[in-house]
Every structure is written in structure tokens, then in C-alpha cells.
Length: 206
Ligand SMILES: [Zn+2]
Image (cartoon, rainbow, N blue to C red; front, top):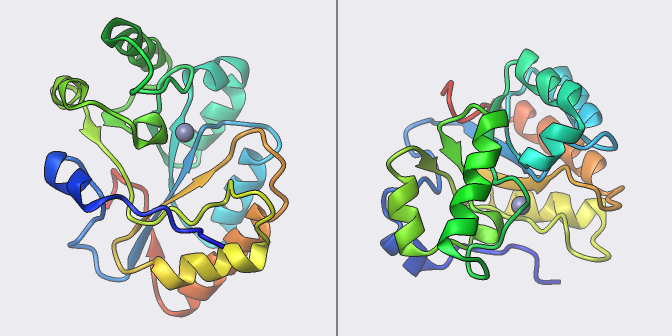
């Protein structure tokens, strides 16, 4: 099962001011959760993170923050970082410059953050350069495929253990698709790396 969706090398060359991994933090892992907040997963994720004294980054959608404002506040209250992931998960390769800019701006009214992650990782060089003026653009180096149809928690755990290195930025999702495998895998990862002496940090406080 193909599961790690690697960032192509050329991305790192083109977008060399974006963040793919945090190199100067030994024994630290940066978990991130995209597309939420969502009631079915976000509270359980927050509880698990608390259990392991872990911090993470949540790249939220403006439309979900609008729907679930209390949940969004609980992410902040627990000391995690939030980032802008646009309002409606707009695809940077299938939208006009104007529509994309407006979607980012709409989300920025609800999500006060200097971090931006483009949905699907799709962003044109023009938009990238424009957004760099206001944001740090955050990609990832580990996308273990929690959205892959039929993936089990054991496979998801194995994918993460195979690809995570010190300083890795890992993408998971707390959106509204059935994903019973996510929480057990997250628990496994928190337990495994905590046991090895790793810290889990959010992207602004480390
Ligand atoms: Zn997304």
C-alpha cells in the first residue's frame, strides 16, 4: 500500500522559503492536523495530546471554525498552534487568483495566525510569493496517508515510524471522514516516541 505521500524534491527547490521540516530541534516531532476542527475527532485528539503532554499544530478551515467555534477555542486554550488552511479548502491549481486570495482572507478573520498551509499542497509560485509577505508557509515531510481508503491503524503507525525523523512535520487530518484508525495510531506514535525521549511540539513554540 502506497502510503507516504512525499513532497517532490522540486517543491523544496521552488518553495525554498517554506518550511518542510524543523532541523534544529533534536528529538522533537511536529504533529499537525489539517481540515478541522471537527467534533468527531478534534476533542479526542486534544485529550490524547494532553495525556502525553504533547503540543501540535492545527491547520484549520475557516468554514469549520465558523461551525465549531468552541472547539476551535479549546485548541487554543490548550496551548496548541493554529494555522490558516483557507476557508473552504480551495484547490490552488483549480481556482482563480482572486477567489483563492479571498478564501485565505476570509479564513484569516477567524484564524489569527502567521502560519499557512495550502490545501493539497497545491500552490502556484505567484500565490506563494504573495502569501510569503504575510505568512510562513508550512508543508510537511511525512504524510502517512491517514485518508487512504482501507488503511488500518497498524499500517498507519508503521508508516509514521518508518518515515518520522527528528524534526519531522507530520500531517494527519481531523476532518469529517470515517477514520477509526486515526486515534489508535496517534496513541501508538505518542507512546512510542515518548518512550524514546522525544518531545512533541507545535510550530510556534519550539
Ligand atoms: Zn487539507
